[in-house]
Amino acid sequence: MPIQYLGLKQINGPLLILEGVQDAASEEIVEITIEGEQQKRLGRIIEIYDDRAVIQVFSGSAGMSLSNTYTRLTGHPMQVSLCLDVLGRTFNGIGQPIDGLGDISSDYKKDINGLPLNPVTREYPRNYIRTGISAIDGLTTLIRGQKLPIFSGDGLPHDQLAAQIVQQASLGEESDENFAIVFAAMGVKYDVAEFFRRTFEESGVSSKVAMFVNLTNDPVVERLITPKLALTVAEYLAFEENMHILIILTDMTSYAEAMREISSSKGEIPSRKGFPGYLYSELATIYERAGIVAGVKGSVTQIPILTMPGDDITHPVPDLTGYITEGQIVLDRRLHGQSLYPPINVLPSLSRLMKDGIGEGYTRADHQAVANQLFSSYAKVGEARALASVIGEDELSPLDKQYLLFGKAFEEKFVAQSFDENRTIIQTLDLGWDLLKMLPRKDLDRIDTKLLDQYFPEENEENASLN
Image (cartoon, rainbow, N blue to C red; front, side, top):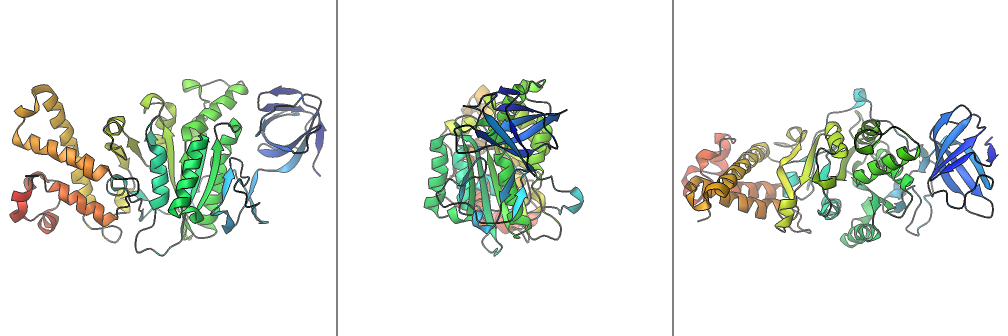
């Protein structure tokens, strides 16, 4: 039988200390009632010592006093109602519907504090998810069951990129498997949340998207709940409804900063940049909930998005994220300054699982070779640009000048594309070949001769430049 307590020992921001607690458990949900208020507030127990419990209040402690507060322990952790009806719905940061369509009608509930997938039960990720964006599909391919973060910075168009991925993502033209998206936004402004909602609705993808939104003016502690709710929904759809789920989490930096704020309120000893020492394990708990379970048809694929303060990739959040995930997509301020969208810098970007989900039977037999050659050739563009900045472009060799032309065309035609342009993988690879034909055939040393003979015959080499 749930026990109700009157009064509090201490109030510190969103944290309450309750004394004389019996049979409480960590992560247990509590209901808090204030005299004179009809609506109950929710909180969760985050720490227990002796007979005291530290409680996080999701909606804040405004109006509470040490004597007018009733606290009731529910006896269970936070749970979310689950059924296929979650698709097409919009929820706030703690899973309450905010779209005016009523509550989710389901008796099936699940604890949101899930566990990372057991390595023994994992199946190696195969096959790819098409985003329709050449810089991703061609060079940093997203594989089903992978966790592939996007590293961005303040002012860069990661919100537009996330919305475009939601609109265009699919399992490929010939797939008939069930596919859906779970989208979680943490600490976003109202106009950004409205942009996401309107974009999904106008593009007709809302019915396959479950959306969780925590706004900047919502309680900070809710940001710690939002990704866990979204992941629980994703796991249900993938492992119990046999769907392939892409989950997008933006912005994980807001999640980490909320963790830092709560840690400071608890008086914990800070680590790097003031973040708690358990930041790594908390991020890993979220990221490692992606994958494929052997014997189950579904999969969970993650795209966490995080903004790097001061564009510093060594900041604790991107630094630790890089250790846990399987690659990264890096947005570049220089490309953004040239009005190129999406401003993806392909050289520091990579997908560690790409090689196992592309090629014959997945995309096209020449995919890996084309990607390798584009990387190699674009790296030489950087060398030619550096040399031109020292001795002047007129003094460059004819080959270096060809690389400069290739680099400009690569950025403007391959990397850049419009917000509503959805390229197939075949279009992306063909575009890659068109660009490589701007270079001498003998310089394409990352491609097998048979592929060169098929896509770049020697008799066509005289047309390998823009002229």
